[in-house]
Image 1 (cartoon, rainbow, N blue to C red):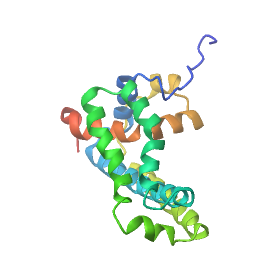
Image 2 (cartoon, one colour; image 1 turned 120 degrees about the vertical axis):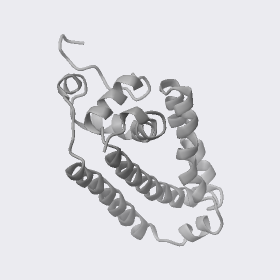
Image 3 (tube, rainbow, N blue to C red; image 1 turned 90 degrees about the horizontal axis):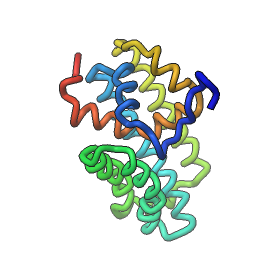
Length: 185
């Protein structure tokens, strides 16, 4: 790596503590973390519904949610390598719960009846809406710390966006469940 160059952002090998400190510099207020959690849950439900619908074309609709859980296994393994054990114990059921929602009859069969031509734009609309909701929350909760050092290592762009999307739920859960001392108004 060239001197002064930012390291590659690898979701399978992160310094979670440092990533969390970066999160706190941007999201130190309790309210923004709650609003971001609402948006993340909305995005997960939308994307997982689409995934269950598409997987239902390959396997029976009733088995699609369980196949989705299997597909998410590498994600859980990456989290296991990088999260503190108690945070992993909190994050795993929070990731599995939205998938399990789609396993409850008659949801898989109902999703199977929604045409893909409708499901795809609905999913995109929900995802974009949730993202815009997150951006809007920064207007209400606008306190931010000094990001100078973090911006040197974590350059804005697609790689950082993907890394933060990968770890957003654990970052939020760490703040809301295990870091009460950092809560502020």
